[in-house]
Image (cartoon, rainbow over the protein chains, first blue to last red):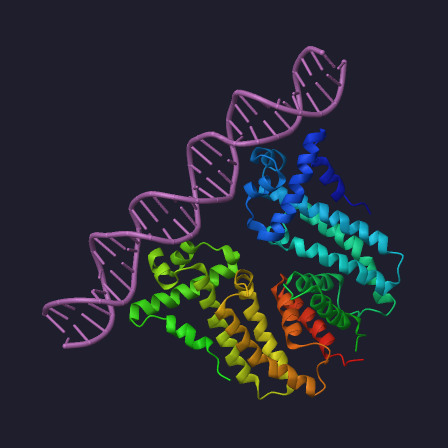
Length: 190
Length: 190
DNA sequence: CTTGAACCGGAGGTGTGCCTCCGCTAGAGT
DNA sequence: ACTCTAGCGGAGGCACACCTCCGGTTCAAG
């Protein structure tokens, strides 16, 4: 199984040194802006944050959707990497460790998912990568009797995504609530 | 314990027949628009949906915040009523019945909460009303041994709010995931 | 060092939303 | 029926976001 996401991202990145720097700055600024203002964040503000002209933004990302896709893809890329890192842990620990990273990812990504409907080709590829990376962790936990069998990986992701996308009083509360919900997942099937 | 929210809402509502009708239409249109476009929904679009001039919107709700507060308050009002209705059921059933209604409420309300920070006086009053209405249901379930005791009502609301605010493939998936998370809540404390 | 291609910034035209202001309309009290 | 006042609609000025276009700049290959 290959993960085409990385290649798609890389293919957009310009070759010249200054151009590449601008590209990265725009991606970071966009990630930040989308997390802060949601899908409707101002493109001119993103260019300002990145310290580049608005023209540069449009050359790299002709449409808002292009920007979404790139930000999203680069994050999915990282999550796929994490899945490989945690594969050596015990089944339940591996799963929850990955989900913890998924949490951090989801906080920023709420806006992107809100704007990117499933039509997008890149979105499809990213989702497949995600499932290919995290799915086995869940199945392993199921086989080890550590996760209930009357739910699937998609259910789990939705659950974690929902909980982590909400505003909590502090991180401790978020972790507590997440742990409680995961207790529901760990329940053995009746 | 009184719930001042209803009075606040009522106090805004104009006395004249046509004016009251416009007020209601604006509230409904705003609820719809906020659910659809989030907190940044266009006020002119809301006036259009309601079939009134933009001036009428501004006379009734001088600021965007006023509109948020009114929509939010009217919804909280309804939830408080539901809590009284379900009070006669068994502890766990009463709690989950109320949370199911909370779900429907939350889908629409995500946008409002996103825009209304805790400074708002009305928001404070609403939150108190919510806790006063739903809190006892949770405590009753705890005392009956049906809900774990190492979490509080706020944790529970955040959890349900998070899960229900997310996009699911269908209602069945949402219910399934919610039920799993609630299994975590029902777990007895170790 | 030279050179040309790739890249840059931002001015500016267009569209849309925000909010105010005021001449007109229609409900409510007599 | 009459009045008078609360309420109405939307034109218009301002601000800001979107996106295009092009003269100037900078990298990197030879």
